[in-house]
Structure formats: C-alpha cells, structure tokens
Length: 204
Image 1: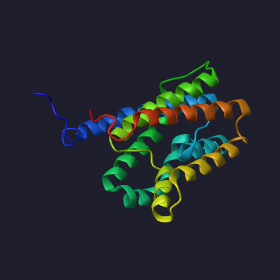
Image 2: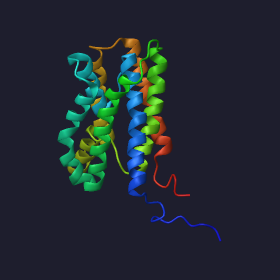
Image 3: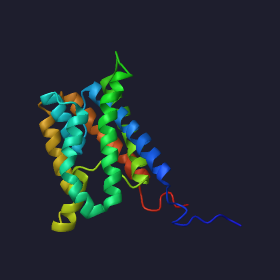
C-alpha cells in the first residue's frame, strides 16, 4: 500500500522547529557576514540594519533586532502568536549569530562580488528552511502584508518601493560596482525563494 501524505503527517515537532530555527538562522547569519565583509547590502529590514551599521557603526545584530521590535504587534494580528514567537526567536538568533561568527572565523582575503553573490545563495537556502517551519525574519515584510490587508496596497509594490529607497540611500556608503553586485545578489536570493517556496511544493 502506498504511503499517503496527510496534512497531519506534514506537521513538524517542536524539536524539528527548534533545529530549523537554529540551522536556518546560522546559514542566513553567515551570509550576512559575507555581505558585511564585502561591504555589500540587501533589501528589507536587513538592508536598513546594514545602512545603520555602515553609517553609524552600530553592530548589525543590534540594529537588526531593534528595527524589528515595532513589527511584532502587527505580526500577532496578521500571522498569529505561534508565527510571531518563532519569528521573534529567529530574529534574536540571527542578531546573535551575525555578530558571533567573527569570534570564530576571520577572513583575510575575499573577492567582494563572489562573497555578495554566494552570501545571497546561502541566505536564500536559510530562508527556505525558516519558511518551511512557518517562521520568518519579520520586519518590513509583515508591514507590507498588513498594509495590503488594511489599505489594499499591494505587498510586492510596497516592498519594491522600500527596497528602491534603500538602494538609493546605499549610494552614500557603497560604491556603484558593489551596489550592482548587491542588486544581483538580491535577485538571486528572491529567485531561490520563488523556485522553492510555493504552495504544495513539498506535498508529494
């Protein structure tokens, strides 16, 4: 008799969720380290955290954690408490790991374009791990979904405008070649998510 995959059989245990948050944020945080070492940027809340890091020399982890705080209220209303709790834990772990890697890894020589592109690949895979366990890294994505529900503003368009503003502001802190590499890296990251995070993708 063939095995039948039911919604119940697809659910994850608390241990699986915990390990997924741990492994997913470890991967994303290492990607962050590569981007930071290369002097690159990304979009969303992480992009804002990078700008604060480059402009005000605030540790990325601290900036990322603080920037996410206002969005948890919206997350509870839009996504529910379980999703919000997982997201809070993921944000806290990423904030910790992104500043912790430097105590164990020191990179003397790094091609910045390669680091930017490969860093986004690692981050994309890490995001898939989080999404598969109903968690995220919160921030502006939650605000985009909330505004779409309440005001009819398309989440994708809102996110695009925000990311465009981050890209323009980043010209203050990064060179044009690194900005172009950052844009290409963001495209790769979103392509990985688009290919692998679709409804029913892993149902059979």
